Length: 399
Image (cartoon, rainbow, N blue to C red; front, top):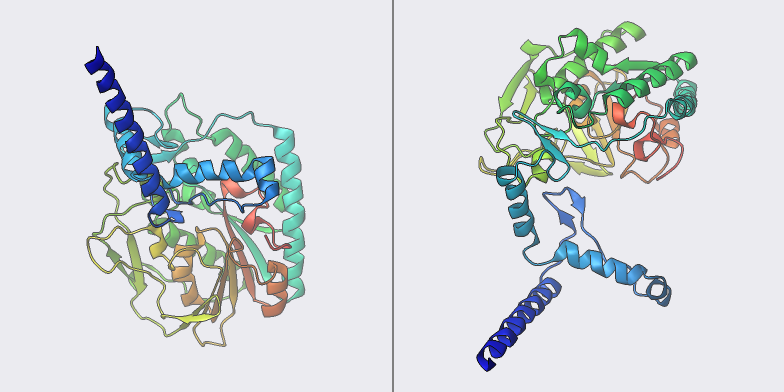
């Protein structure tokens, strides 16, 4: 009896010792601020003040910090993900829907409110018309480019028992299009152009929520043809014979496969292209001169390659100057859908300014336009963000 009691005590002490050891390791090891696989900032403790102690903010933040920085956390998460994928075959893993040949984003069911969507589209239409007026007052032309997200492009490939978001996206696009037409704001719907081209599957990634480089090339030509026709211009539009394509053999870790810790093995590789006849240009990122390149490529063939290979990822402000003053200047703003597009767009213009309002805080987009007075302003957003004023959706305030 005593031996059994002693054994129980030793087991308990051993378990408590293990927990204490893990806590010590968690507290003393270097603190990371970014989760590579989850693609998010890790929790940071709130400032230790009497107010934060009293209202529970500091204790709650400590709990989140311990969860995010626990020793061995990534290993345990990866094991859990493997079990969900390979053993339990769950239909949704880490907010990803694994299908036979691609990874789709999980969308929770929600009640679609047609009246709200209509009213919101009218509000956004007013904002876009106001921005159009600012651009035109500076002598420029404004165009809004709407693109499908991966979930919308492959909406028909969701399992029947999961929400594809197709109904909401279709109604949103319908109301948004009507609001823009009522106000005379130029709208280029990339989804319509892609459907007219046969809705090629290769236009969108099977492991990422963005389009592929093929989809970006198609969008570039669609936009450039529209601008040339609408503005009576004759700007260069890079065709297939004008580009040299390269497909990297590196493992491609898209935003969706990253959430699965790279355990879902797809066949997709990252592709990029360079002009057959290159032009000289200078590049400045956030006021600092950078290498004259539009790609951030891995140093070895073994490294994972990410979507950030295009333009080096999200940057507050990038200015590319080709020194051809006879050509117009363009300003592009929007989410990361802009990045592979910019890898081509600079070739057709004198100066290309690119702004990501999530990171650019020097001034509002309105003030930026008034300062630089670009000839053309392009907004690039996906269907899921059409009714949002977050980040790149608000050109009149710093966020």
